[in-house]
Image (cartoon, rainbow, N blue to C red; front, side):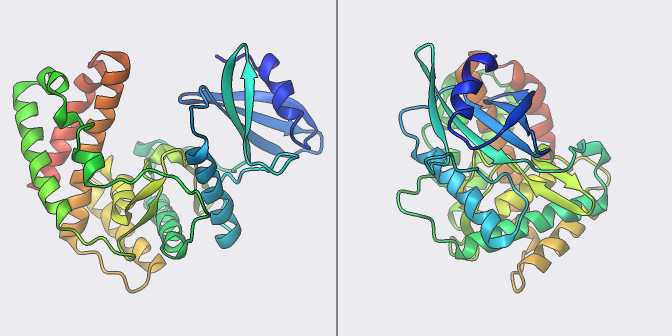
Length: 317
């Protein structure tokens, strides 16, 4: 874990905040601390473990959060400008570079998937619709750089299906089925419309853990992976982990109704949602492949692949 005693003074020296206490929130791809000020306010400090060669994608993510919050009133983690006006700060500790940003604190609580209510499902769909309605008219600033989640992303040379070593680690039946599903989803995605009503800036990682629930609202957090993709990918992600849940038909109906209310005039045929539910399965296998390439083992895949196959069989039946 990053030594906060070393890095915090450097970061806080660049912000006009009277921080009196901090708490560790989590360590994953980033380290996140909660900062408490003398006047009772709270902020979130995100420290990237490595700054990388190009800060443009991170600055673009922060611009999205700033503009989305300002233009819609959505409660999201809005970046706080430093004293010099920048939205993030590079910090060096023992010759290692970190990229740090401070965000407004988002109220609410996490809710486990098995405790999600229909009202909370409705709130998640409303939040997705609000983001996509904003995206449909958003004009990003100059030098905006975010990933594009298209055919090349899901099925190209960096995907799971292009890595013989990873494919060879899959159980024969599961591997054969996933290859078949991969081809079917790829062919359908290539013919799916890509226009301003269907494709734009998306969150990309809309699982239940990236919502904070407050009364009847669901607040979006963790925009690390936001980029350009099909809007239905986000809505399908909200629903994907419930495919095997007996409540799924009700959740799907609620989500579709609330999403449509937030994007008037947009019809969502059942087959379109099914396509993106299936694409979620492919995206999850790509995620497992990234873990495999990073760690060199397939332990995570062993637990996840059977679940993914079951869900794909359900939506592609």
